Image (cartoon, rainbow, N blue to C red):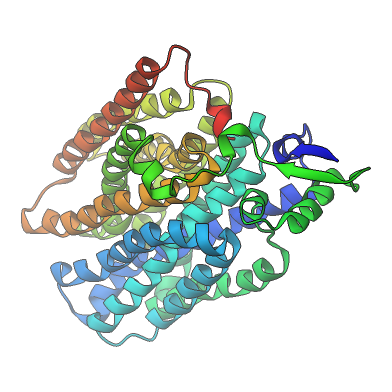
Length: 447
């Protein structure tokens, strides 16, 4: 009986139709996640006018989903290790879709806060698990690029939320816009049930070798010529140490630096995506202007993450991302100087999006490369969960902008600080990894 390493089948030069299908489905889950995450920020100005509430009163609504996302991300890793990636992805996508639709029927801030909290649980649990399963189906040579490219769907989804708001908000109202945003992933759930395969690594670790073999035969386009025994790469071999103990033990330093980087990055990202439309409206922009300008930021992230993913497969991926944060830090300083010029401000926001939002999106493939499959679901989801705490703080800090009457220039100068801390965190991660072993860290061991 022949022994086959599953990665020898997955690491093919040309992606099979099944691998492309996983990539496309992953992109669509990311897109819907981004759409339903960001749409609340775009409809916020209309909600303030419609309900006659103050900006501080809106803060719990904007941050409720972020609290839920943190909880959802943290609990989803152990759930995925127990029940499988596919089941968690499908159930959580269904959750955030249904409760986004319900947000359109809310009649009070209390109802809307509750619905957004439950929506956030689904949003936070879906993202790290779809990232994990996409990563596990992509060949090593293009793993970072393709995983990051699928993750661009999140940024594109946020941008499309801005476009929906720009052209439909005044004619349809905020409730119908958010209902439209929640309806799209309902359709996707049906496709996921029928077409999304389970992770082959998970199937082998749970002794479902027949299912795993069937998937691998589909990838290679033919059956195995003889009876085979499937095995995982050495770094993927099942260990008696629990995934949580691995993350908090062997991978504690890398995990801590990823948590700090993600925390600071999401603080900046969600402050801008949640409050930028309201900030720009207060500064005198029209509905169409503030929606389009705010949409430029995440759209820049699509471009940036695509370019970064390509370089991450050719260079040290951590180094690529850390320098993106460093340049974004400089651009925030520039934004403070050009905030009074709408053209230069728009260009600078786009470039910040390309670097900061692109780097944030690229943390997904970086985290999947950092951990072996034995603790990957926990490692990736915990980075998201702890990072979301920064997002919560960012959303609350946004309301303080109006309390302390901070101008655009002051805001950009302040946001430069956590961006620089993200750079420092990844720099420390690289230094520690180089000093820990005699040879450079081999990311392919986590493939």
